[in-house]
Structures are given as C-alpha cells and as structure tokens.
Image (tube, rainbow, N blue to C red; front, side, top):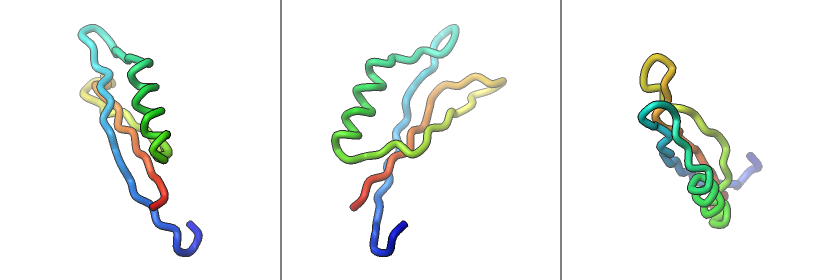
Length: 67
C-alpha cells in the first residue's frame, strides 16, 4: 500500500445451500458482484463456510475500495 492510501472493506454472505446439494444462482451472484464493482468495490477474496462433513451452506465475499 502506497503511503497515504486508505481503504474501506465490506463483506457479504452469499447463500449456496440447497436441499440435496449446493444451489448457486449465478445470475443473482453476477448481478450482486457487478453492482458492487460499479460502486468501486473490488473482490479480494471469497471463502466457504463449512457447515459439517465438507458441506458448504454459504460463501463470504470480501471487498475493498479506496476511500
């Protein structure tokens, strides 16, 4: 980070749990990510929240943007 640069951070939870397996609405996910990108947010990381036995029920997406 260059001297004087400041960032703010944001996290969102994206639900992916389904009855039998993961359910991801890619259109909704794209719309959410594109909306945040249009507001200057950059996706820097995404991680899954393991419910149990390797089952994922949601993702956490972490964003940053310059203040």
